Amino acid sequence: MLQLLLTNKITEQELAELSIIMQQPENSAAIEASMKQSWQSDEHAEGELPNHIYESIIKDQRFLDVVTETSPKRSWLGQMALRYAVAAIILACCSLGFYFYNAGISTNVKHNNQQALHKENGLESNHVVLTLSNGEKIVLDQSANGQLGKERNALISKTKDGQIVYDLSSINVEANDHLIYNTITTPAGSTYQLILSDGTKAWLNAKSTLKFPVAFSKTDRKVVLEGEAYFEVTPNQSKPFLVEARAMQIQVLGTHFNVASYPDDQVVRASLVEGAIKAKHGQSTLLLKPGEQANLKNGTTVLDKTKFNLEEVTDWKNGYFIFRDEPITEIMKKVSRWYNIDVVYKGVNGNQAFGGKYVKSNSLEELLSSLELTGTVKFKIDGRRVTVML
Image 1 (tube, rainbow, N blue to C red):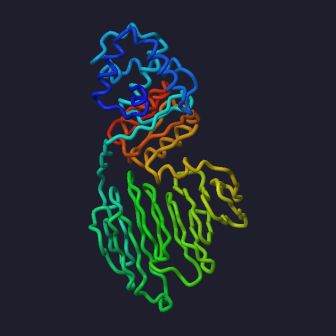
Image 2 (cartoon, one colour):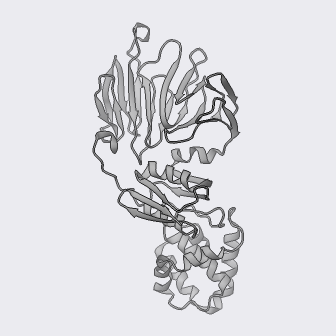
Image 3 (cartoon, rainbow, N blue to C red):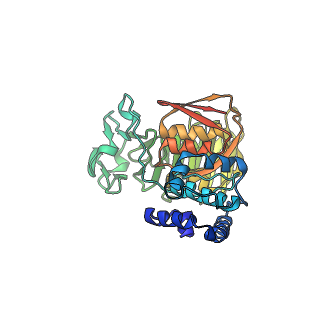
């Protein structure tokens, strides 16, 4: 039953039964040993909880509500057992969904809470929008499945999985005298997938824009990205696939890679998952192998190459935030794009690093509450404005 608690598989009835068992003094030693063994088996755990984490949790009203309801007397439980019990209950049952690398707390809890929509003026503010070459806008996340439109005899349709597909089976590419472009834009809190006319798959992160030809030219396949996207490019040795991302150009023949090029980021990053990539900026060129990342910092003229963690780079595509020793300013930048908030700082050391994994479908309040449990940062929410402070 303790293992069910730690892995977040325990039912409400089983939790109540466990709490009753924990009230019995003769079970203290067994509970302590089991908790300790289960907790230390986690790959991120490093001994018992640090004092400031323990104090934050034990004073949390959510913990008191869970434990006190069925276990009003817990003085029998030794300090060691209490630490593991507190950590397990608050993490598994109170929807924190976040783990702290430095604190040695780890959990991967999924929740059913749905993110609230942030309403603003303008069609693009809270919908995924496809803009056709004639300026017509199609709200994709509200459109029914099936055919959505036609561009130069190219059929645009929406599959039952929500993907947008361009079908060129009835178009004569050789007869085109010029390219016509479509643009897809995602708002805060949404990702979207489309299949381009050559079969290439593209996933767009929140607050991103991809401009692409309905049918590619005879010499290359060029798209323009602002924001972040993951590409699975259909191989074509005679027609390279090009991504223009701010001042960086990425050239591939057929491969999987991620590009992050938000306007407010200081670095454009192209991360290669498989295959090969050529990244260019002016006279600077890099050839990448899988696991390598090309970086272009603002104000520089030379690309540099680094290694990257695959899970961290593709976390957004799989529905997670994953932070590994990231400055709070970088974390809040990603959070603001997803929850559509404005972030201000008050007396905060922007270089202070945090780590954690969080399910993006949960609420902003849950994420910020989890961060506050580190005891090193606090948040104040006022509408769309979030103040980060010590």
